[in-house]
Image 1: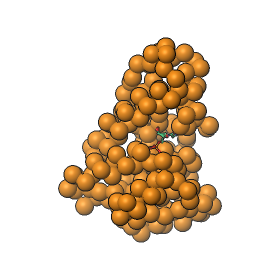
Image 2: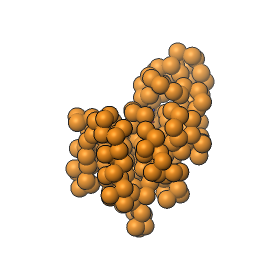
Image 3: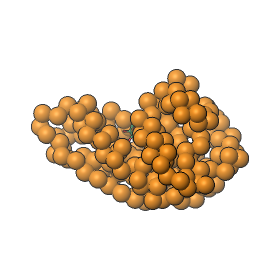
Image 4: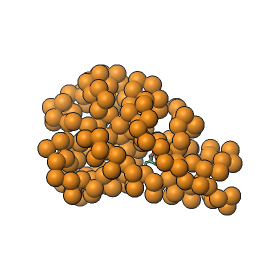
Length: 185
Ligand code: GAR
């Protein structure tokens, strides 16, 4: 049985889609959920699914405490799902080619520091782009720069608001991220 840990900072709708997907996958499941935010709704989702969860500070991420827990729990793949902190080298070194992220745009566009969640969709709208999408990629020591695993696009209508763009991107995320994770594991 392969074990997946999800790190998330907020609502956790992607985490929910992934957890549910793996209910019907016999050889892998989500066994651990971590968040840097005490109030993140993803922790509620973990409770509802009876999945162990934990919270941590930036210090604990950087000093090896989070890495130690992931190793102790025998995690095979670390999945970032709306996780808004940079993964430090201590974790990257301990999980070579075993940390995956989803970014709500077509990297390398709209990547890097400060480009997360609605900030991305607002920037896409402001630029007048006619398409956006998702990027699923391996995580390396550079923010949003790891090797790309999959990109999927969606058209933007002139009338779409940033919220409507976000909704379209979320649909792509729920459709593709769980399946890609399954293929990786
Ligand atoms: C998702 O759209 C994800 O791609 C994005 O945050 C959202 C989280 O939604 N991630 C980033 O911006 C990472 N840079 P969720 O909490 O409902 O899954």
